[in-house]
Length: 292
Image (cartoon, rainbow, N blue to C red; front, side, top):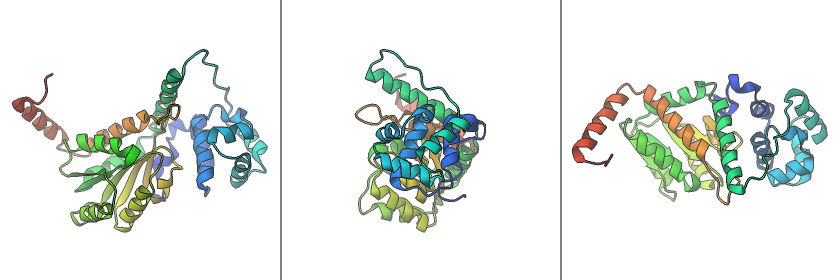
């Protein structure tokens, strides 16, 4: 495994020509503060617009102060934000996003999610990280799946479908003092990999649980909203999928789809996956589980 953020945080080789992928490459190798990671995440989400934004506009977009944007540019090795913006215009030329006209906030939220899915498709142009994750998940017996608060639904959905093909899936969907105990129990039972879904706002408990999992010897595969999420430092392989932030509550279409892609990759490494699905279908028919 490689470092803390893993191959998945770098996007795909064929997707490297996109403005978002170029920004990701620019940020790699730098130790960024939480505030700077927030700026980086905002820049990736608005990759086509960033070369045309002032430092004040970028600060408003990221919800930080203008001096924070200046310090961020310096942390990347530039004299200041104007030098960073000139660099972005040279290496990632792009036109500002066209005015969408009179659209309401709901349509804007949908459009933003479509853009998140396009970015995910660019990342998946290199299937290597997902295939590696699928191999790790398929080989872990049992397979603990962690997701708390905003990410609980993603973890639950993955665990529900994974249990149809994987012999032993253990959902860790509740926090508390027993979370570390359940991780330890999975290790004692033979687990060697833990899958985590981590979405904002990121609970401190999840970061601590992943640190404990790594100390216990587990390889941590994480689906997170950004390669700069707080869980990156405690993940062996991080697969990014952005969330939408245009509504009162975040939307997570891309993380959900990435979870289904991981299921597919895991099935590819489970030789009896198809037989298990057929067995389930036969039992479902016999029991009359479904009306369709």
